[in-house]
Length: 118
Image 1 (cartoon, rainbow, N blue to C red):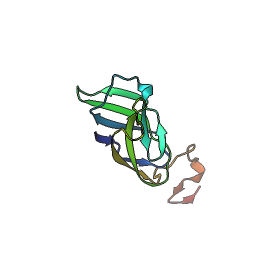
Image 2 (tube, rainbow, N blue to C red):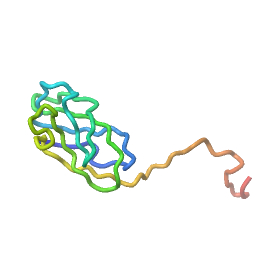
Image 3 (cartoon, helix red, strand yellow):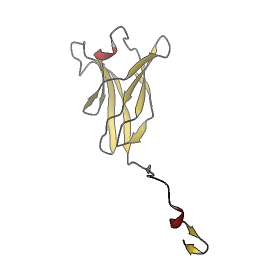
Image 4 (cartoon, rainbow, N blue to C red):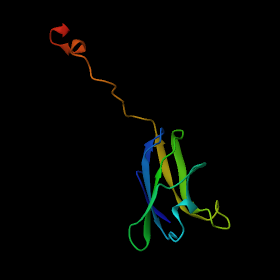
């Protein structure tokens, strides 16, 4: 099962790390034998770390998607039915990008003061 997904939401632009805390994960296979499914997009995990004897942290870079919710699941490609033998699933919410990128610094001549624009 997937106990938690951190963060549970993010920008639709993707490109950031999402952590899945997975219980009952068979870690005897190499990392390349696992996939993370974000809706219909298949991703390779970037890291798998043991949190304790039962829980593994699976890190993956979130792909870009449309705004909305998608099901996220983990599966192993060595399974007889890899797309259906999934380690449960959870929901991830893609949001509008609310961050702004600042390019350069404002020039002193464009600063508004009590005397007007200089």
